[in-house]
Structure formats: C-alpha cells, structure tokens
Length: 486
Image (cartoon, rainbow, N blue to C red; front, side, top):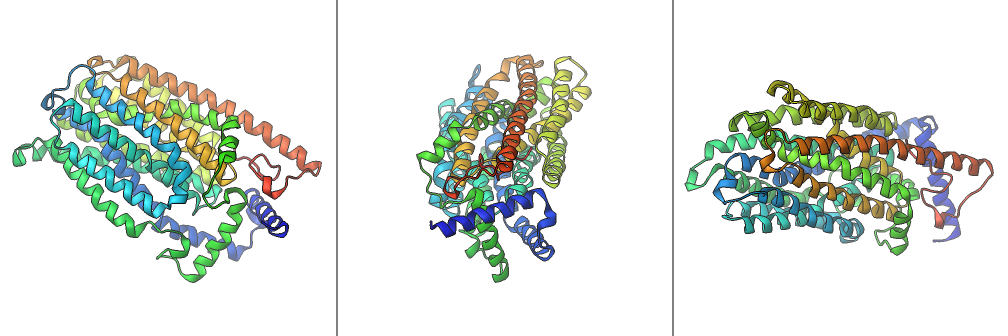
C-alpha cells in the first residue's frame, strides 16, 4: 500500500470513529441513504442468517424433545449415555470453529454456508434411522463438526456488511433465532406426537427426518440467498452498491484485509487479554444457554412433573419471551452504543430464576422461574460476543479473537451436557446450582472487562492529547484513534 493510500485509509478511519462518537458530523443526506441501505440489508441479509441459526439450533436441540418422546428407550440408552451424546457434539464443534474463523473469508461465505448446511441436514435426517447408542454418537459428532463451522461464518459475514456500531442488533438476530428455535422446536415436537406410528416409525424419528429435510431444502436456497459480495448482491441497485463501496472503504480502517490472515493476526488476538476475558465469560454464559436450551423440555417433564405433551408446548412461551427480551435489549444496546449495561442488568434476573428452582417451589413458580432465566441467557450470550467483535481491529485480529472466544465457548457446551444427569430428576440440583454460579461469575467478569476498556480509553485520550499516532500499517484497536465501546 502506498504512503498516500495509507494516509487516506487512516483519515477514513478517523472519520468513521468520529461518526461513532457524534452522529452530528455526518452529512444528513448520506445518513438518510445509509439508514435506508441498512434497512434493506436487514430485509435481505439478516433474515437469511437468522433462519440458518434457527434451523441449526433446531437440529442440535431436538435431542431433548426426542428424549421426552421415548428415544432413550427405543434405542436402549442407559445411565448417562444421553448426556454423553449431548456433550460429544460440542467437542467437534470446538475443533471446527477456530479454523473456520480464519479460513471462511478466503473460501468465500457463499460457498461455505450452503455446503455446511447441506451436510448437517443430511446428518440430521439420518439420525431418524438410528437404533443404538453408537450411531447416535456418530451423528452427534458429525452434526457438531458441521454446525461448528456455521456461527463464525455468520458472525464474520455480518462484519463484511455492517459497521461495528450496527453489529449488536444483527448478532442479536442470530440469538433471537436460537431462542425462536426452542419455540418452533416445541411446536414441531408437539406435532410429531401425532405422527407416532406413521410408516411404522416413532414420532421422534419423524422429528429428525422432517427437520433434516427442511435443512437440506434451505441449504439449496442459500446458494441463491447468500451473496458472494455486495458487488454481486441481487437486491442492491447501482447507487446502493456505490454506497456499500464507500462503507467498505470506511470499515477497512478497522476491519480491512482480504481474508488472508497470518500468524501476526492470531498473535495479536492471543496476546490481548480481552480475547481471553470475553472467552472465559462466554464459557460460563454458554453453559447456561446450551443447558437451558437442550434440557428445558426434560426439566419441565421430569423436574416439574408435567406430561409429555405439556413439555413440548410449555417451552414455546419461555423461548418467545427470551427472544423478545433479547431483541429489545440489543436494539437499545446499539441505539445508545452500550454493551455493559444490558449485561449487568439482565444477568441478575437469571440468578434469581435459578435460585427459585433450587428452593423447591411449586411447579407453577418453577415454571415462572424459567422466564427469568430466559431473560438473561440469550441476551448475555449474544451481547458478550458483539462487545468483543466491535472492539477488535483489524479484521484479522477480529477473526482470531472470535476464534478464541468461540473455541472456549463450547467448553461450556461440553459441561452443559453433563450437569443435568438423567438420574438427577426432579431436583436437578447440580445443574441449577452450576448454572447459577456461572451466571454470577459472568456478572463479576463483565465488571473486570469494563475496567480494562476504561483504562485503555483513558490511555488513548492521553496519547491523542500528546499527539501520538501510529502508522496506518500498524493500526489495531490499540491505536489512539480507536475508541472502545463500553
């Protein structure tokens, strides 16, 4: 890059970061055009990714619904084999996420996303024909690997289309999709009870088969719905593409690069304490999210003593509530550029919810507690990711930091599969107590993360006051002109 081009890039970066701080510096006409463009992206980009997230969580979480419908008996599961099947999914999920974060931009999103969706759809469909523990484990391993490629692909895909101050709501769309998957999963599982015995197969088998067919069909749709870039996007006109080019030039100041990341980018991410701080917190909140999402139908049935049918539909309002809370929280987080406050406010609701479950209340009170938990688990998981993603630069470092976070994340998935043991009903004391502890740990951790960002921003202000600058070729989020979002 020439010195002149480097200087232009730095100037663009300064313009955008001033935009972060003061919308008043932006031309009103440009601002109106950009708002219209973002609304269009929200119609054609965000829903595609949101539906992918919903389908992926349907396919991974249906094991909980299947267990309430007799799968454990039909395939002869014993002891903690169901828990093992849940946990093994996340081991290979972990192995897939980091390399995907580094390679997906190079391999191209429009190729990777449809391919992995098709693969896990076939695996889900095949799960409907298993007859023992061994094949169940194999399908869970394969499902974990292919789904493990998805979330980093979607997150980084969003980073190519949206500015960092727009990211929290769009990452929220993904976790709203995960919340809605619990609702749709309950509705679909309820419907599958009526297919029990059709073609000589149990209802839980039809649950896997139908969800697998839906996934394979949507993978075919994604070939046409996921654009290679904004230059080839079917839904943008020439004027909108020109505006996207301008946005891309501005975003390059903190997310530039062509996807060919090197060891230097990974080292930058690995040496930055915030990557590990957010990552360790993510282990805690994901333990709650995955444990709650997978085992909620089982907890309602065996813990609260509702019937099999009731367990399928009672999960629906809980997950819908979680989706609404997260949607509102993410909107306010982006609207006021605040990441810390939504986390620190919502986590205590979940803590109270788990405390109620541990106190041995009536079924009705315990069911109310699940709404308190839903208030926290979806918002806390997604906002922590958006907070880190928006505070990393350049693009290579962001990919490395998200890779670290997402790899650590699924340690929580492995743990979540073990804390709700089949023989722990009806109290599930270990699961509820562990989840309460995780959420408390995360709440404390976010104060630590906030202190890191406050200290660094103060240091940046001092450097700016002293006229200290860094060369554009060395620009990272540690540069004085990059202000961390808090």
